[in-house]
Length: 513
Ligand code: UN1
Image (cartoon, rainbow, N blue to C red):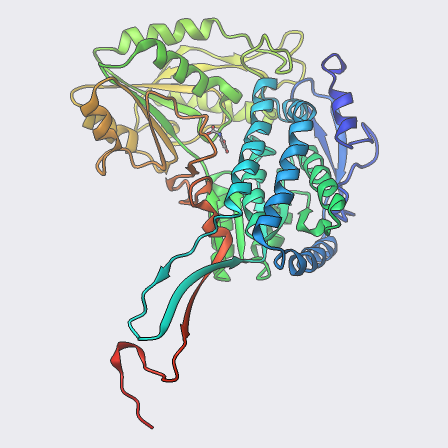
């Protein structure tokens, strides 16, 4: 791995104690058990990290609360200026951070850089937004009265993020939360703790340079039990959680039990509909990148291709031919298309899915398999697989976080394809490949795709930060990132001001004393 400059990258990011002892964030007070971060790229131990105990957590909460009192008094555009500086630091550190993401998580270096670019983009977005936290003004029904609404910060926001986007999802949340006047406590995935520490260091530097308390950004480490400290904590008005549907249901119930707010961004079961009017070349690029990019570990990864029977063989053959060209290997080597899965547990799930689709009557047309030769010693490299299947299969209904693509045939009109596409419990991303205006507009209509994201002539993954990101049904209903997603990080207040010497009541009610 040293050939790829990973150790230099770690040094620049302030992660010093490689392969020994602990490497903790500057403000995470962690004193609990140690977790080790292994790279799925080559199986080596990168560094160890101490986890957060309940007592540590109380200390973190203390710094966060104190920081909030200061941060919320700063005018929003000034908070935007801090986020601008944070974005500039990310620009400087894009390569080392992209490299760490690639090495600790296993996605390609290009995608690691892309992820840091998403962070930079959301910072830019947040800077502009810091002057646009608009509320409305209304006309009062009473004379000499003024009515308007304003948005105030919420407080301490909890962020739970997943291994697959170990830095960008935190930034989507935190850049918005910060300009809104909130402070954040982040629990990154225990599978990618070093990405968390690197980001914490970058944020801490910016706060220090501006004489601001580091508690504006706090890091806690560990597994779900550490996350539970936040979900059950009434001092955290909003918990934003990204991860599995299973996790999301637990988080949602814990937060709802104390009537807190949660923002959930959970699993997808994303499909591309390929109609008789599809452009085959575009379809192949969109579907293959969607299915094998990030080794199928995006919540937006393409899981299902719903192909019109008249196009079925043509599309199938083109996709299989593309799969035969795929190079699988070290994601830091830019010649490779597909890197490893996150760990051997994920490999187990991948194997199970392949077994199950066959058991349910599916037909594996690209067999897949675990790679074992030289260069694959981590045991996490698998071949992307394709199975012909039916939508009602249990395994097709389930999100497997691995490069397994299901081909499903439809006949007749596009409504039939839409019914299949909507016929799952998840509702994140969806796409249609067509040059037919009627089909495209039907897909986008009220009786079309039921997902939070619906694309025409684009695949299911790779959304830009400017739009609101998230999905319906078991995907959890949350929206992060662009558009007006910022509103969830603030509390709305309606204000009515009387500038007369009378006190008329609303609805014309008379109450004479
Ligand atoms: C995720 O997988 O959790 O749209 C986020 C995409 C990326 C984000 C994915 N911009 O694929």
